[in-house]
Image (cartoon, rainbow, N blue to C red; front, side):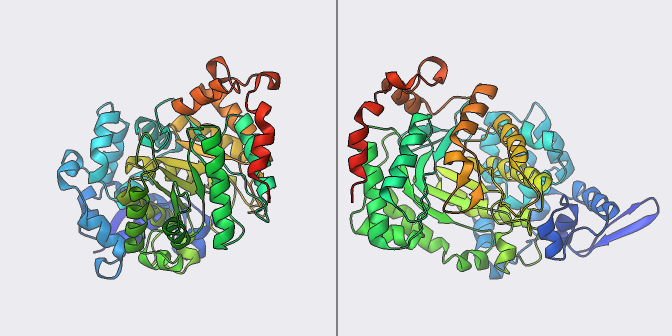
Length: 465
């Protein structure tokens, strides 16, 4: 099906909906690397005119990645909730944008609508939105998840405590973990990116975190971010697995490059559920995504990178995850060239994920060869905090010494919480106050009052060889 429009006497024609979507996207280096970005600003605006007039329901009949050859497309179409879609089924993409920004789109209405939307619908409407539109609508999307504490409540912002170490040294990880806890970080998860795939090493990391959480009765969860097959083996061998982690993408071929299928994720989800380690909920999956992963795997099939990213959310929501994290600037400037593109992508990803009913967080980050700096990350951090982001990263000094990229620090979390009046997960905040780490209004208390510091020798023992 061809799409066309006329602007100032010039006819713009597009081969299919996939090309309309790609040309309507805000400019970014990844789409130009793929050869699918708009050639001119005029073509981009023409594509947006066409997209605005396209019925939302068109995405149910015109697949951007063929149904017959892609299991993500099949999953999205086969699980589409037609009754939930009814309130907006008559709208065009442009009308849908206006509806989302209206008073009719309340938090309750958006929650009910989420199962009726496909990832492509969310991606399409985001392409017609300014940054402030993405923020305004995402703020109305409340997605709450629970394991040992409650994440995503309005007015709250959680932090993943990320104590990575380049050699998986237990003492170094314990020191970073203590540092984060003393700054009030860790309510989203204490999550380690391991340098090793060795099962004995991974087992030691899991057991150290489990003993830490048990000894100090911390209402949080741990995760070692290894491949799902490793986590399955560790769980089968009796390791204390809280969350199952996996990186995922928006096409079947992308996920195969990660060594992942929906069937494997189904098995891992069932195994984690059977462990029953949650205390206030059973959301036990942790997914990470990022714009550009499909193209880097030669698996985008001509679909723009932001739409591929949204399709990954279509897979994630099958498992009711505790956490979904877009690692927005991690893949590099080949896909998001500078601070402007990273900021836009972070807002898009958060909007699309929340609209689809996911508990979205963001690793507000960049690599050292991108045209970006920490000021850009400050801007994105404040924008996402305003938009109702569920969680961010907490990295010592904002500089991850194992993954070698720049993220957000424990101090950044304190800044954005205080500036925007955001709170920690309620169970975690109550624990911080019991430990005399924080006092009223979540502010840090002087170290002399801190009960956790009085048992620092006990914490050190956890990391003994």
